[in-house]
Image: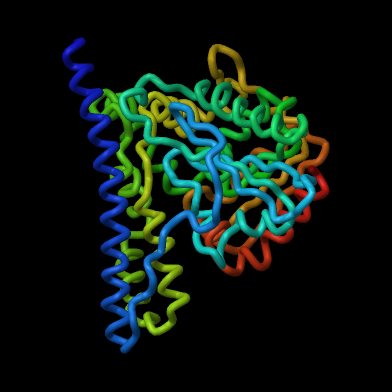
Length: 368
C-alpha cells in the first residue's frame, strides 16, 4: 500500500504539470487558428493574449491557494475590500479576461480593493483534502488577511459557480468574517441543476470508484462532461471564428475566453467525493444534513446581506438550483438579480460588463 501511494503521489504531481502544459499548448493552438482565420481575411495576427490582464501582486501563498491583490483606483486609502472566490477547478481570471473586458478592473474603478483566491493544483494532497480545508481553512484565513489590511473592516465576498457554493458554506459557518455575500451562477440544490445532475446520478456514476482509480479529477475529464452538454459547440465556434476574423476585437475575445476554458486545475479527489455524493446525489446542503469537519452546515446561519445573481440561460447551474437558496437563509436583506445570459456570460461578455456589473457594484456599495 505504501508503495502504491508513493507511485500515486508521483503520478498526481506529473498530472498537474501535464495539465499546465496542455493549457499553454491550447493557448498557442488558439493563436495559430486565429492567425490563419485572420490571414483568410487579409488581416495581420492579433497580439498575443495573456491572462490575467490587470496588474496585481501577491499577498500570500499557501499550499492550496495564492492570495492576490488588485488595488483600487481610488486614492486615499478609502477603498472597500472584496474577496473573490472562484471555482476550485477554474482559474479566476475569467473576471480579468482582457484589459477592456475585466470585471475586476470595473470594481477597481468603482473604488473596491479586490482580493482573489487563486487556487493551486492539488497534487498529491488532493485525495486527502476535504471541504473543511477550504470552508474552515483557506477562505476564513484569506478573509482575516484582507481585514487586517483594512483596519479590521470585513470584506464582502463574491463567489462564482462552485466558488459560490463554498462561499455559501463559509458564510453560514463564519458569518462574523464577512460583510456581505454576492453569488454568481451558484448551485445550491444540485438536483435542480439540469443536465449535470443527470450525468452524476448515483445509479450510473460512482465518484468513489473514480477517485480510487484517479486520485484527483483531471481537468480534461471534467471538461468532457461540460462539452457533452453541447457537442456541436466547438465546431460552431470555429465557424464563427472564420466568419468574424476580420474583427480584431472579436478574435481577441475568442482567443482569451477559449484559452481560459482550457486553463484548469484538477478537482481535489477528497473534495470531489463529497461534492458528488453529498451535494449532487444526496442534496444534503438544502436538506440541512450537510456536515463539514463533523459539524452541521445550517444555512439559516447565513445572515449577512445576500445578492444572488442568476443567469437565465445557464446550462451549468440551472436557475432553479440557485433560487432554492433564498428561503433557506437567515439574511434580512436577500435579493435576486437575474440577467439574460449564460453561465460564462455573467463575467465574460461585454453586455454583462456594461449592464449587469454596474448594478452589482451599486448593490455592493450600499452593503459594504
